[in-house]
Image 1 (tube, rainbow, N blue to C red):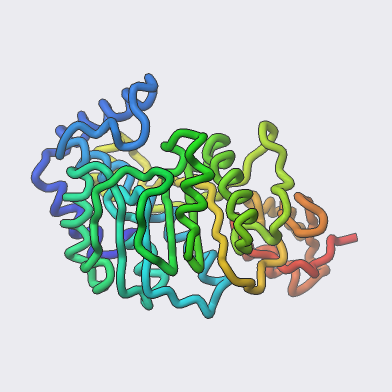
Image 2: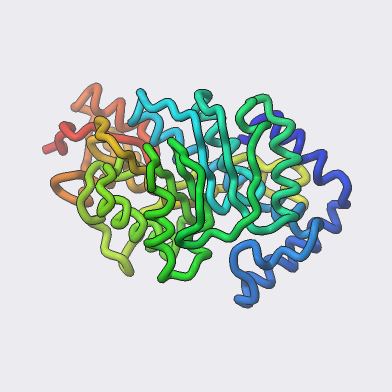
Length: 329
């Protein structure tokens, strides 16, 4: 869920437009995406489009970023960054998520190329209860290899890497990781988004970084591209305006995302990761896990396993799972 201060600021920013205007802009944006006439935020054609984009996507991108960052932070409990660089930051969903995850942050920089997007992002950030978010430096520039960048303990790129030319992505990932103690990259939970994350993961590993989430190892991803893809899901509530803009009736939506988090030092890693919603039947829980030694593995936990069964009943898609848990016989 969006923090109260962000939700209030976003509602205020959207109040200057009627729901009909926002819905019309969202419909036009969706059509441009569908026809391939738009990529990234290059399709945004003024302040109304930016507002519609924020209403349409910011709650979901915040939820995905916050979930990925919490998983990474849980595996690096001693990591307390003070500086944050968010590349291709849009209206700032990732900096709000980082501020909520790491209160130690003191200095934040967002690099974004669209001036209208920066304007809205800056206005939203100024309302934050977190001093680091309020004082964010917004820099107008296009992300490209060789771009000068501020030093940062934490470097993030959320829903932006896949919008760059494919040939530039490894160079941008290396640029993002340069001097960073942790890198978090998030993309849509689609086969294409996963492919972008998987390639970034390989680049980060080649840079000597340790993969801390979601993977329990630094080896090659055991999922064969084209047959499946690694992604996760977070459920978020929809406000009445959100439902109207999206022309939806449900009070919630599920945002699917792929991500990777890597660090410059070694931390204890998850033994395994739950890759799908656990399948729960009477007395039995089936888990699909990513493991270090056995790749993707299906595990069945029965009620007779006591504490392990109770843990399996509570497990969710994307959660860590102990490496020592044995399959029921």
